[in-house]
Amino acid sequence: MKRDSLASAASGLDRLLRKLGRVSDEEACLTRTFLSPAMGRANRLVGAWMQEAGLDVREDAFGNLIGRIEAHKPGARTLILGSHLDTVRDAGRFDGALGVLLPIIVLRRLRREGVRLPFAVEVVGFSEEEGVRFSSAYLGSKGYAGAMRAADLGLRDENGISVRECLQEWSGRRDAWKTPGRAHSRRELLGYLEVHIEQGPVLEEHGLACGVVSAIAGQTRARVEFAGRAGHAGTTPMALRRDALAGAAEFIVVSEMLAKMRPPLVATVGRLEVRPGAANVIAGGAELSLDIRHPADGDRREALRMLRSAADRVAHKRGLKVSFQVVQDNPSVACSPGLTGLLAESVRSRQGKLLLLPSGAGHDGVVLSSLVPVAMLFVRCRGGVSHNPEEHVGKGDLAASIEVVGDFLIRLARRNTE
Ligand code: GLV
Ligand code: MN
Ligand code: MN
Image 1: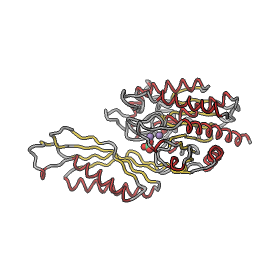
Image 2 (image 1 turned 30 degrees about the horizontal axis):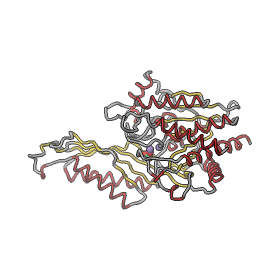
Image 3 (image 1 turned 90 degrees about the vertical axis):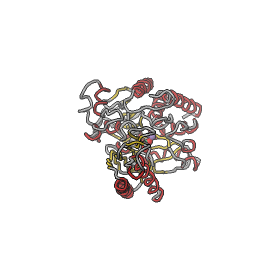
Image 4 (image 1 turned 30 degrees about the vertical axis):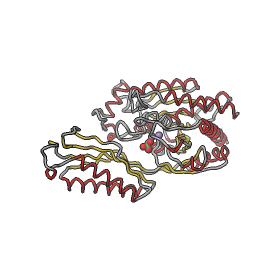
């Protein structure tokens, strides 16, 4: 591909990322959660870009945005390219969005160059990956892969709205989400490729624009609730208190200590809700989110057992009740050797060096891996910063990843016509 047109494709991608980065549920920052008004606007905007690039666009009953180009041969299998269009609160503009917008740019370039692929391509913007609204991640890819379960549908957001109710309102047809099953059967699919920012500093340390993911770490999320007794902050002696927030605080410190003692275990409490939440009232209730990850599933499960016991110990000592509910549990996922090998060839041919690296972050590929071979391309991000408005990918690295993905599609096309 010519360098000058590659640079203009990278600038075009950068422009789309900036535009999409302004589609937010909050005025002051980027926040776009599952089936929110901003998600509706994002789907319309990205859907229009897909159409301009020659894709047929639809939205499924789970709010996933799907753009498709048929193969020139009937009955050919489908390659899925995608990532998520939801974000964390006060997000950067690359996490998820890059993996949806970059394939659109690549497919537009191939079309202009007259390249016709022997397989169908589906670009998917999954509606939920971050787990912000319902504390449980991957609702979009679960819907797409036919893996949504009753437990997922029953989850409630902070306003008490369930996933089921939310889907009914979104689709406008009460049961639209009930029977869609999976979008494709296994044998119709060729693979899934996700392009994502690395969200860590390894590529930057090695001076590389792109890397290939070997595996995605396992992850457990739980909702932990301490219940004590609300009371007067001025009149209740310290010895007679059952302070739910103090219990939660002790548990948070214990989980941090446990993770520090057992690297590469990571444990995060990112959300804490206190009831009733007033300066002069002892907290009667405190609910927190717990997220733990480890590349080895056995170590993650052991940490989960230890944290459950720690929550019981803290509650017992302080006269509190505790409930510990696991809301998400995903084993680690190895990427497909076949597709990953091909992607590695593309990376090597672009930058000479190949770096294989594991992902500590979760990705839609975790759910897709139950249906189809998965490969992931990581793109360097400045300082390894992510889940933060400072997220940044330089235009040179956007160009490199556009070139790698284009090359990968051509290699895959060659392999599939042989
Ligand atoms: C998604 O970004 C996650 O790993 O939490
Ligand atoms: Mn992501
Ligand atoms: Mn993320």
